[in-house]
Image (cartoon, rainbow, N blue to C red; front, side):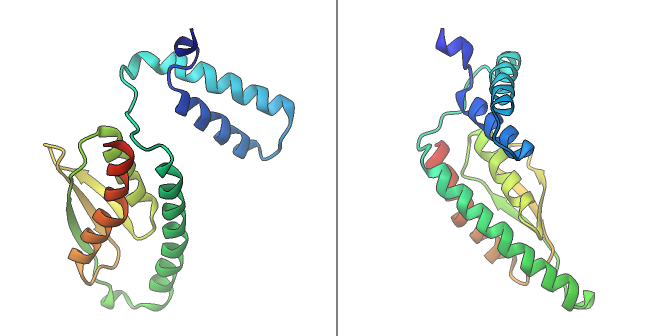
Length: 163
């Protein structure tokens, strides 16, 4: 019964928290509506998600989110400095191929989204076999360093969470 009501409990929780952040005030009516959305949307979309993503270490998600938020804030300042003070002739844009050890589609999606959310980088494509991401960097004097940082800072943590 509980599995039918909450086919994807993490999605329910995410929807409730997101709705409450969007309305930006804590009132009973907003919470009730958030719970209705958090229950109905996963029930409607459940046929399109036959399997739940396996989370091996859900607590590690908190650390991952904090690191990503820190990197987003830091990258905003770096990109602002590049845009405001670095002449375009000194920019060293680069395409970086990041080989993937991740196999879970959900983990790869989170990694690609993380890269795209971080200012100065953009996930542009994934290889046909799903074993590499193509990332564009606004300024990357050392593309190998960018690749290694993505693998150690993000991919390794996602492997602990998903695989």
